[in-house]
Image (cartoon, rainbow, N blue to C red; front, side, top):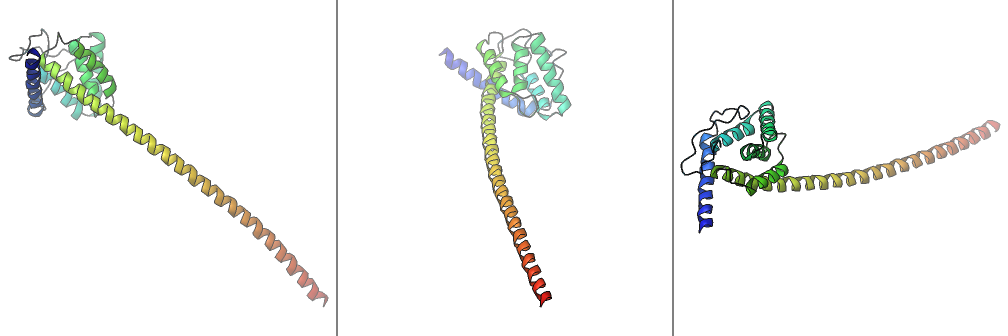
Length: 208
């Protein structure tokens, strides 16, 4: 029964999270490095002292996905520094979400999966919104990792096929060039024989 209630609660939070993505994606954000603003806990959520609101994570992820390379690099560096200097559920979650977000040079779904699984293994100091975010992005990271692996497999397979085709083409070219060289030698020999015959005929005519 308790598990059912928890599942229902997680679904409600997930739905709220998606609504925030759609409605609040363009809202201005504050820097995480200077400290995410701490505000009152959302109604019905578990009170975690110092935990940021869910939309703060989402707003930064929006900036990460839509920003230019300089903005993306800054967000990644801040998140990484926060996780390294002050490791905790919130800073680790923030860094994992940045890694799980595609579209920037430091995106790493495999590493994100590992971090998110560690985070979800201990959720005592996380809000329901953070748990929902971690769960949703873990699922997305898993699918993205599978997609990337399949893409790499196809790329490797295509590369091997191209290499094999190139090797076969090179072999055919080498065979054609060898045949051309043989033909040129035969033509040279035939020309020499023809010149010799012509010289003999000329000599006979001169003698007559």
